[in-house]
Image (tube, helix red, strand yellow):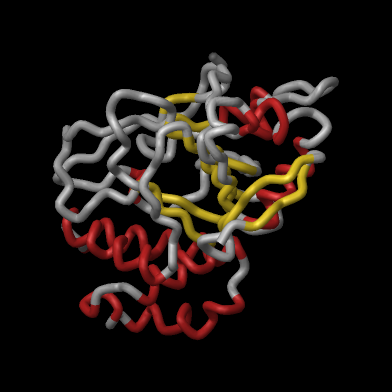
Length: 270
């Protein structure tokens, strides 16, 4: 059911398919404009909008037409023999102590539709589901018992540590098809947002800023066919890449960011 959100002096039609998701709807009269840059991320409203993402977790912008130059290609591809880095739940920013506050992933207008979905879930829910959905052969290891007992009280850093342990175990012990099937079970158990991509859709994800912290992954099907026609995505870290008047872009921070799919660090400013 649609609701109205009052923001930036305007009324926006929105709905909430998950408690951590806010979808901005646009009727035919609003399609084709760049309302993200012209309004939501414009100087007077940017911090308030980023705080909305912080509180919510995931803000989805439909029918958003933009040619802003700050978007970067999402790199990396999967193969039948192994999972790409992006198929595991992760935050963006794989090196350095500072993580991007908000990550925007976008499906631009293109001839080929994006068939591979992106799963997005709260950090704690994703890690809890990863532990709960371990196959019986892996779950029987007694080393998981203390983590199960302490799960509800773990800090963000401790959740990262547990997630790393589970991810490394799954990578070592499960074949690619089994690992992809496992993560589909994790998506369901975490009640992740796994909706098909639409053209001109952007998803702004609270990545790391003391509010809601979400993670995302490339949700390839268990029987993945490498090389199949598939539309591409672009992404950026809007708070770090779009300087407000009087601010300088932190190029050292940008240099530390890595692609979540191939692990290659981002170095160039386009």
